[in-house]
Image 1 (tube, rainbow, N blue to C red):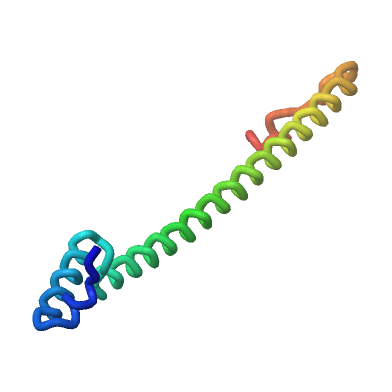
Image 2 (image 1 turned 45 degrees about the vertical axis):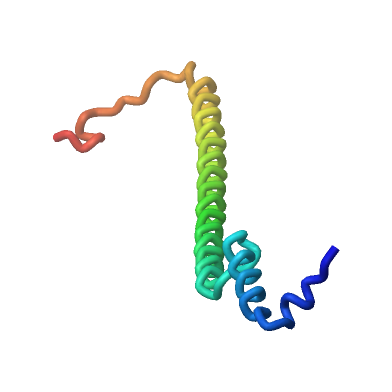
Length: 104
């Protein structure tokens, strides 16, 4: 097995190093600053988008909880009104005239 050291340090060493560098760049082992900056910008954009998505999900959960609580209160009010109506069912209806309701 031959060593790479004589090729790199010999007369054509710069060409060998350049060929290795280009080969690594093409194979995806090396990345330019432009590629790295682009990946950083994309990561930042994804992080911002992820934060916005988490905020939206939290807002949706709070809204759903509020709706569920409002539904529970509505059910309690309906049950209370039904109970009151059942207790007063045996009383005669009050004498209400159209004038009492504001229809004159």
